[in-house]
Length: 188
Image (cartoon, rainbow, N blue to C red; front, side, top):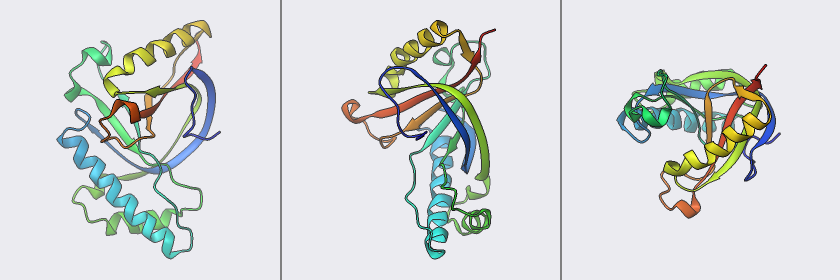
């Protein structure tokens, strides 16, 4: 299944292992900590693209992905954004070798590059939907996902996941596209 394709209505999908550079932190989206970590992630990824190209396996950078959570019983929308936690991630093609990653991290011209780690995770079964519009309007799309989970007797089983198909700096809601994804399991 292509991890960068979703439809306008919630659907059940399944994803195997994903591997790539990731950096974790806490703070509001677009805030200082987030921007520092995103800069480090892209610096390492850019060096990794160079290493892959030198080895005859060039690739384009994939869309940024973020997995989000709060350490609070309240809804994330009721928790101050500076308390949000996240893993930022860039999915790598299978042709990228681990040794290139080590080289890329050392060569990356960013002081926070050492925070970037090579990770592999598997989400498995998920519900996903394409959100069109501003990030602030996500609650309406998340409500569709929640209704779908109840209808299918599923419950969340992992972190809220977003795949930013448009540039995260985009401000025109007409151009903004984000896949919202949630790992799930049967409610029983």
